[in-house]
Amino acid sequence: MKVGAIINTSSGGCDSESEAEMLDILKGAGVTNCKSWCGESDQIERAFAEAAMHKSKMLVVLGGDGTIRTAAEACTGTDTYLLPLPGGTLNVLPRALYGDSSWQEALKETLANPLTKELSGGRVGDKLFFVAAVVGAPSLWMEAREAIREGDILNAVGKAGVAFEAMFDTTIQYFISTEVSGEAEVVAVICPLVSEQMSESEQALEAAAIDVENATELLGLATAAAFGKWRDDESVTLTKTHQVTVQSKKDIPLFLDGERVKVGTEAEISFVPNAVNVIVPENPIR
Image (spheres, rainbow, N blue to C red):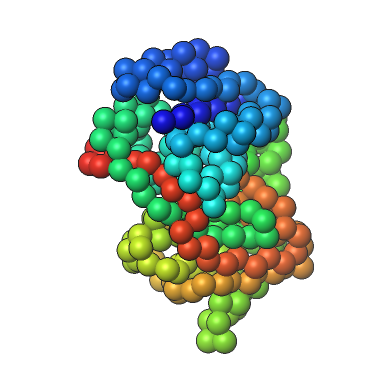
C-alpha cells in the first residue's frame, strides 16, 4: 500500500526532526512504502501537488488547522484515506478524531488498530469543513491566539483589540428556514462528527444562533462552537438543517475548522454527505 506523509514545520507543533520520528513510527507498524514531504508553509502547496501524483492510499498529514483542512479537501472525492495529526494550536479536526492525544500517540494508536470512517461535512463556496463553521466577530479571537503561538505579542494585542471592538459591532443575519431566521452575534454550524444531538451517520448539519449580551459568555460559547461543543444555555438555539445563509453589512469573520476564510458580506453554508474518508483507532483512548 502506498503511503504519503506531509509535515508542515511552520505549524508550531512539529519541526524538521518530526519527519524521521514519523517514519520510524510508520516503519515500526510495518509501513515501508512511504513517500514523505517535510517543509515550511511555502513548500506545502507543492507537497500536496506531488502527493496527488503519488496516488497514496493513505495520507498522513501533520500540521495546523489550515494544512489539515487542505489535506481533507484534497482527499475528498478520492480513494485516499486521511490520517490528520495535531501539529498546530487549535487542532480542531484531529481533536475531534483522536481526542487530546499527541500526534505520536494518535499515530501509534491508529496504526495499531486502524478503522476507516466516512465523514460528512459542510461547504462554503469552494471550501469544505468537517467539524464546525463559526461566523461572527468573536471568532477573531482565534487569530489573536494564533499570533501568541507564533510569539508575535504586539500583533496578538492588536488583533485582540480589533476583536473586542468588533464584538458587538458585527451583527450576523441568518436564514435557516422560513420558521428559523433572525440576528445574532455568532452563528455556528457543526457537522455530525461532533454534534451531541446527532449521530455521525445523520445527513444534516446543526446550526446554532448565539445571542448574548455578556462578552465573556460570548467568547466562551464561540470557543466551544469551534469544537462543536455546547453548554445547556438559553442563549443557544439549535436547528438541524441542510443549508444556512448568513450576511452582514460588513465583511463576515468566518472560521472553518479553526482556519479563517474570506467570504465578503454574505455566505451560504451547505451540507456535503460522505465527503472524506479518515482513519481512526478502533478503540480510541480519550
